[in-house]
Length: 243
Image (cartoon, rainbow, N blue to C red; front, side, top):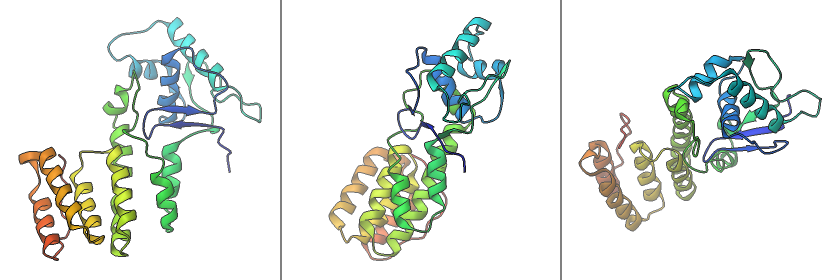
């Protein structure tokens, strides 16, 4: 098993942990994030276009960006560079991982304690605070990460709610909402978690807040679920809806 020495954390404002020294160029930090989600070897022309889609950059800028990223990342315990030299291409060593990888490895566990550990990784909107981060939206990387977190949270919250552990289900859903605050399925899961706790007051307050947030865009399925919960007749989940 490869030992990860550097972690690119994107489940909230971006942090790069375990580096040898600070990045001197903001673009070098952003290049590291890009390469962490485009494994293998990426041509300089491809990553530079992703980071600067509206202009071309000089070979000198490309070289200095890669060099600064390499210095900041440093060298692994086995002597290999975390960002090896590869001519006109760039790619991170397998000693560099991401918190998304860690979340994914925990997501397959059957133990609810691992679910809680996974959701603790969520610190906010994925890829937050990137200056050149439009690529994460444009190539679908951010939406894939949000979907992974949301689907896992819905699955775990449903299991915990069914076990009568509504407080834990609520916490999981609220963590997921930090990552993806506009997926209405999460709010329906939250309503179910609150009902499992027998807390009708918070159930009503949450629905009132949701109505304020969504307005006329509130999905009928959410309204039907809420009414069913109030009358002790939960409604099955159907099609997803976004606010």
